[in-house]
Image 1 (cartoon, rainbow, N blue to C red):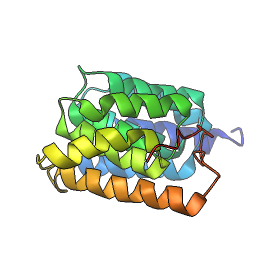
Image 2: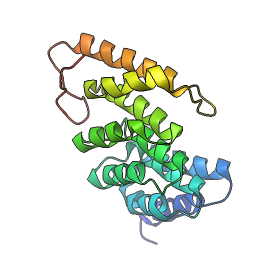
Image 3: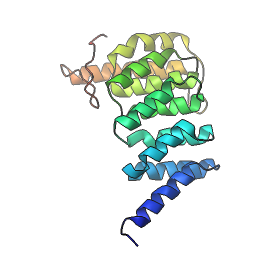
Image 4: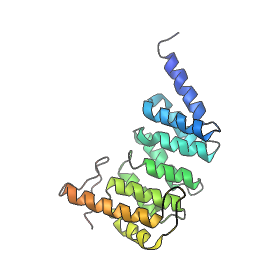
Length: 193
């Protein structure tokens, strides 16, 4: 038996579990895929994100892509956020995952979706833009903070998240001084306050 076979079998069984029915098992598989960061699973995880049978599977795939770096993973997450036909929980998880692994275009995707009809998408776009320290988001966040009282199940209101995001971005700008770039993708900040 070739040396790499047990890992490959293990990786394929994780992807099979990712596509299962039990939410506990699906997310345990997603966590294991996320921890391993095995590039051999990337294509299968993206396939699950795009065509998984249930929203649960697609959301777990977006979670697993959280730290799977690379243009392909990021593009799949961006596409999921923008897909208005997709379930809001999948789109929200994809937006949250972009907080960690993203590129300059991810900022634009999240900014556009701050005004999305789904409260989950608005909430997680606000979160990710805060984590990115994107000052371009401040105007949209102020609007959400003022007007959007909808509660995201298991969390709090979009307005509360937007207020937190505004404070987080302002704090990042103050602490970074002249260095106004996203730490992950080197997107230049506009410098607006």
